[in-house]
Image (cartoon, rainbow, N blue to C red; front, side, top):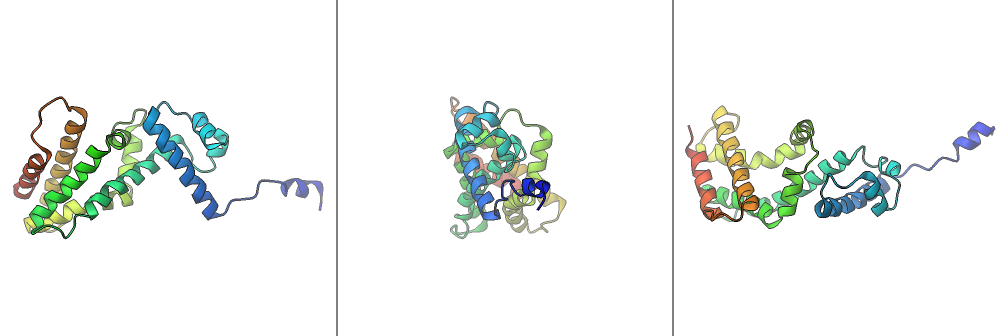
Length: 208
């Protein structure tokens, strides 16, 4: 073996997929804590690396950028929100009431976890292009499909129809408006969440 081959053989051994995924999970967990405590913009890769016990350059072996860590955390948090939603299915006397309960579970998750809400929807230093790439991910789009399916059935219209899309888009934006107001403007005496959501669902079922 010549000198070049001996030097080449001294490189760091590649990690198995399982080891790499385990390290990514560890990094993401520490990043989540720091982002929630200090804000996404305030935490540098150097700061994160110090907490994890590796150099900033070593972090890039696991995540291409700090934004990549953030968007992975967004997926994780949205998964948690929709676990609340999934737990509701099949528990209401009819579909309309079940949709109301699902909407309440979705909004309720963010109200119970306002720090998660701020991280996902209000983090500074995030471009519109980053948000667009995130929401276009199939695993994110699929989560919101539940609202489309319920409204299609309640309206007795095909899921693919333009009116179902319009009604569901309206419902989703209404839900986000409700949770944003209840979380960020707590000094105002808002109508209770359940009543607001019942109005949102009613409007979406009957909108032309």
